Image (cartoon, rainbow, N blue to C red):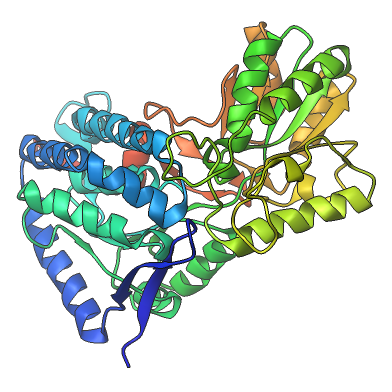
Amino acid sequence: MAETIKCVSPVDGSLYASRPVASRKDIAATFAAAHAAQAKWRKVPLKERAVHCLAAVEAMLAMKDEIVPEIAWQMGRPVRYGAGELRGFEERARYMIAIAERALEAIVPDPRDGFLRYIRREPLGVVFTIAPWNYPYLTAVNSIIPAIMAGNAVVLKHAASTLLVAERFQKAFDKAKLPKGVFQHLVLNHKQTADIISGGHANMVCFTGSVAGGKAMEQAAAGRFINLGLELGGKDPAYVRPDAKLAHAIENLVDGAYFNSGQSCCGIERIYVHKKVWGDFIDGFVDLTRKYVLGSPLEEATTLGPLVKAEAADFVRKQIRAALRAGAAAHVDPRSFALDKAGTPYMAPQVLTNVNHRMSVMMEESFGPVVGIMKVADDAEAIELMNDSPYGLTAAIWTEDAAAAQRIGDEIATGTVFMNRCDYLDPALAWTGVKDTGRGATLSVVGYEALTRPKSYHLRTRT
């Protein structure tokens, strides 16, 4: 019997979608078609590429009414927020299309008499994008649109929990009349994915997922000399200084911690609060957290949906229990959220204080609706604690002093420094991380550098 990849809905545990995995013949044919199409696509003028990509964006947006409930059924995000992901998808896609000409233009050094010298940005070939389920459109678009704009072909492998997203991308590009083979998708298991990389089918791999998954990508690519873009785990911190506007900080940090049920690589997972504002911050944070509505993501009133699967919720519950045994204090009674039940993906939000860095909940990625909050004496202690992590994706500083935010940001090992905001990707800035968060970058002109290779021309015009 043919192997299938199944999407089991966290809404009610039902089988929402099932697709057979690609055969060896399908995989070979897909990549052969991609390489053949890319050889022609790289010669297509940039403006014509933009026409196809913009048309694909419009086609995707036209499917909004189908996509929003589809996301809810596949991975549990409440329908009231589904359109927000498509707005982010549009913002990133349009920006990367708009800057393509500037990002891909030749680099010309100072003139030298008798020589014509310049550096072109050449497409890599075939980009293999391996996308996660938590933001299935946003994470995928980061590499897909700029890769195609740069003259590459793309093969997309999406997560099992969001199987249908790959099909939506395919429909959008087909509607945009993108030449056949420039964009394709495959349904694959983990072994097939590794075999594609180790087999040299692709020229670059763009992976978003766990640290363990990133290590598997590197092992599969060993000896192939192909580019790897790895966006992996996060344990993103926030620091609230005594001069912060507390109401604004509380509102945004609660949202940053619990949006998407905490299933965000750049969500806030640990907060450090200056002792001068500790009491007021905790009171406000807990009060707002208790106002979440845990329920079916298909209901408009729901503000907190289920996690993607029961195992994910149980992992977070285990972290909380361990922290409580070690002396942490919980500020939310999960019994006040009727749907919260062990063994299900429905989980109440939780606020923990009296925590420390010996606890898993402060050091290991939770990827769920829990946040640990610690009191600090000054900026130096906050910096030390923010840096005490194997991860480094973003860090958020809440203050009215921009110079202080820059000074503190200079001391933090992280890919992005925020001031008075969090959990957001600006497409004009590079999205990158340090330490176990991975390597490489997407978005901005820097993202185009990762999807191309430099080719130098040194032409002597006088002999």
